[in-house]
Length: 120
Image (tube, rainbow, N blue to C red):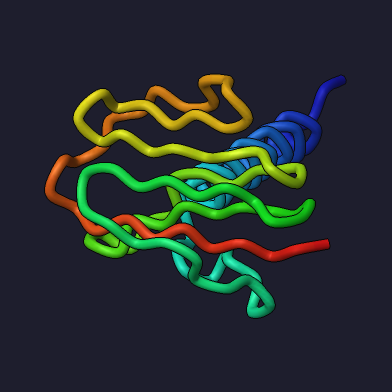
């Protein structure tokens, strides 16, 4: 004869899984948001800064970071080889690296954008 216990245990198990799942989903969603300046390594140097449009050509291989200083968000990070360039055009909502479009996210024309570079 069934007792009330297995149903209770199963219900508690389902509830616990649901709570854990929702907690993990919330943590992942928060992790996907930009941590801003903290995402830029301490060894990266500010190489360019500008409003609306900004460019940088790498002098050696390395990692590039574009930071929106007006709202505190990292808008792009990627790799560049020596002599490759990165270009941000806020009016066109586009970032290109090495001649290829790497982002078409909404950018704000009058924000201050900073390019940081860390050579390998």
